[in-house]
Structures are given as structure tokens and as C-alpha cells.
Image 1: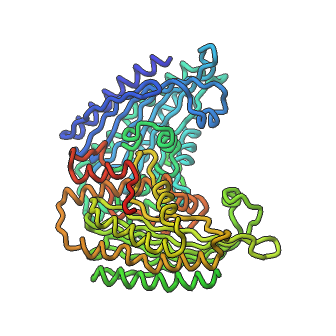
Image 2: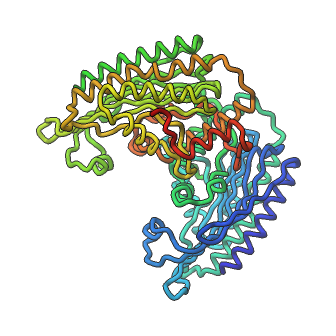
Image 3: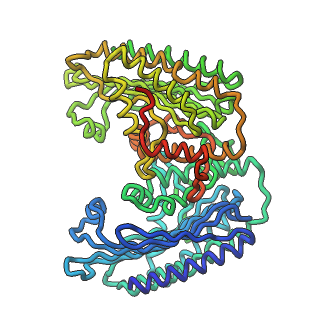
Length: 301
Length: 301
């Protein structure tokens, strides 16, 4: 399974980068290969200052070896050999009319003393962080998510959408990071789902990611925007930074265990502003976004 | 003591704001008073888009009531009533030739069941975060720190300078946030120092803070700088954000215990950039800064 999934994300990285380059028209991804001291490494692909994409990354990594003690505790296991691989992407568009998007799909294996797989699971998700709300766009994103989910489990969309709303939440601001999507973790063997079935789900959802996001970019890429709207985007990007550095478990785990810093922090936006107690005008488009982020919305039924 | 110290920081806030307005020439502080639900509140004073200061805050707060459980654990006490007050300032200058400065002075009291003071201490410090190294400036800052320290204890400067280097450290980058200064905490009654003596030290160091920083601003404020240098400042400000959101205990404590978010996050710089794996040219002024941040320097003997 680990080879099957790794081959999938290698192919996926190539496809996604091609699609993003195609829609951008100008920006090109450059590749940065890195090696991990304890075992494994990754391929980071970065695009900067494109026509559409201000900054983005599509990274894959495959790491293995000794599990750090802190993670042993978190996973509540005495096994200390692991393997993990996954693909992570974050796209920060230049235009505030196009939402930022994040996605991640990963596979984890634990080994017992005899080197046999003692546990394994999938995890991942995808979520949208708009600066202005176009309901059609959000509904489109969620409906692609739901269509794929429904093929694999009747409660998947509902559960994973709820997880996503709970996870991507800036509790110190009492607001969601964005308008959600899917989030799932510890997808293990159950009576309904074996590991090959989970693989099919992850493959399906990751292969269709592009369908959830690209039509939104296509629709909004030629829209005009003002400096004030760009400014709002940069202030809101500050919330993205706050979430990733204060709350995101993956980021913090990476930072505290000598992960590959630049690959982890590629998620941070290119230009960000913090202004004291900045509040949009009442009944403005900006305030509409804030209202929506206060309480998770049921985007589709 | 709590009233004496609170009166001191009230006066200090007024003086500091006056001095910063004087040197800025254009920007004015505006005042934001806030009330804390559990008891107390604060006065936040913010300056934005000045001639010299791009963003800055000089805040005082006085909070009291029930100590959150997490903090009881951290302080290893069963007492649960507390009082704390302090002044915090952060100044982010517009010019990359002027360093960012941070300072904080605080007093803490714990009470037993009978309402009597069971423990009390002072804490605080001041530190400099330059974007370009002017050795004279750093030496000036440290020598003012040392002069004051030496009046109160022969090992103060050495100890508090070392604490500062250790504390303001971005361990995930293996680099210091800046070039240090002073950092002290849990300054309690000892055989040499009683609480009134600690008060005298804190009063002295805080009253002289202006002498450690203003001459640097004065000296650098008319220096020209290029867009590339401004850009470097904005990238380096990213490290400031990373420290404050990932490592700074005060910030995290505030964010996780319903502190007054905007007053806590006034420390974040106004405009920040994250660029993938950005590295300055060899032997450039920018690379000189990085080299210095790798290992703490003994600025004065």
C-alpha cells in the first residue's frame, strides 16, 4: 500500500503542477528536493509571482525511521518505527476574488518490533479560504466534495465537513479560517471500510480536487478589484498565518521536531498585514465574510 | 506595592508615548480602553503610519481574579487568586535601518485563602531586533542596559543578557530573533534583594529605556534605504511573527486563555512577507545579520 499511495502522489504532484501552470499562464513551478536525516525526504514544488498565483506550493514527502517520542505519546503507541508519506498544497492567488485553497492527503504506517505493520491509516482533506463570499463558488467546492464522498460512504461528506469546520478554527478570534470542505484522519480498517477501500476514496477525492477548485479560479480570474480589496485580502491572510502558527497541529509538529522548515512554512502567504483592531464597515462585503466565519454554514443539503 | 507599580506604569506609558510622538513628528497615539470580564482591564495606545514608526503600541494592563488552571500548573501553586499588571511596548519603525524594539515590565501577586499575599515577583526586559547591523547601535543599547543593571546587582547584566539570548530564540530556524538585551522573570525576595529593591531596579531600567533606544532612532532616521532593503525588513519581520506566535509564552498564554486579542497581537508587524527559502547573497549586509543571529555575541565586556 505504501508504494501504491506514494506512486499516486508522485503522479498527482505532476498533474496538479501542470494544471496550475496552465491556468496561471505565466508562473512556473521550480523544484527543490530535500533529504531527511532520519530517513526519507521530499520534493517541494513552488510557484511565486505568477499571473494568477502570488505564491503556491505542491509538496510531496516520504519520511520513515524512528518515531519521535512526542508523537509516540500523541498516537498512544509503544511502537517506534513509522512510515509516512503525503502531498500538501496551498495556493495563494493574487486576486482577492479568488479564494486560497489548501489540500493534503497522507498515509501512515506503524511497525512492531518484528518490522510488521502494526497499524496504518489515511488522512487528509481540502478547504477553501475566501476573502469575498461568492456563494456559488463555495457551493461548487462543497458539492464536488460531496459527490466524491457519497460514492464511498453515505455519512462521509457530513462527517468530514463537520470535522473540517471544527479543525480550521481560530479559537482565539472565535472565527473559522475559511468556509471549510473536508477533513478526515485516522481512516483505519472498520467493518465497512478496509484499507484498499480507503485508498480508493483518497484516490478519488484527490484526483477530483482540481474539479472543486479550478472552475472557481476560471470564473474569478478576470474580475477587477481595488487596492482596498487587495488590502483586505492581506489583512485576512494574517488570520491564515495565525491559524497555521498557533493552531495547526501539522505545522507545529514539524516546527518542533526539526521538520523541513521551508517546506512546512511554504503555506504562509506572500504578503500579509496586521492592522490594530481592523473592522470592516457594517453591511459591507467584508463584514458579510466575517459573519459567515462566525458560524459554520450548511452550504449544500 | 501593586499600587506603587501601577502608578509607575501609568506615568511611564504617558512619558513613552510623548517621547515616541516627539521623535516621530507626525504619528499620534490613539487610546483604546478595555475591560476584562474576570476583573481588571487595560489601556492600549497605538500609533500607525507615522513618519518614523510604521506601527507601534504601548500598552498597560491590570488584571486580577481567578488564576486559570493552566497557569496554576505552570506556577506550581494551589493558590488561585492573582493580581498582575504591566506595561508592554513594541515599535516597528518604517525604515529598515532602525531596529524594532520590544520592552515589558510586570508585577505579579498571588493570594492565599485568607486573601493575604502568598507570593509576588517582578519580571520584564527589553530587546532589539535590527534588520541591518550597526555595531555602535547594538553596543549603545547593551551599554545602557549594563549601566542600569550594574547599579543594582553586579551579575544582573550578565545573567539577564544571557536569559534574553535564550528566550528570544527561534529554535525552528536555529537563530535568535534579534541581538538581545535583558530578560528577567520571577524576581522574588532573596537574601540580597527584597521586593522594594526589585522595584527600584525595575523603575530605574524602565525610566531609562528611552535612553537605550531613542539615540539609535535619532541616528538612523534620515538614512536612505532601497526597496530591496525594505523588502528584506519585511521578510525578517516574518521571523518576528514566527517567534511571537510559535514560541512566545506570553502571547500564547494570552491567546489560549481569552486574553484581549488585539492588545496581545499589537506586537505583530504591519507588513510582512514570506518568500520560499529566501537567502541573502554571500558577504552581503543581510548575510552579516544572519551570521550574528546564529550565535549570541558578547556586545560589551
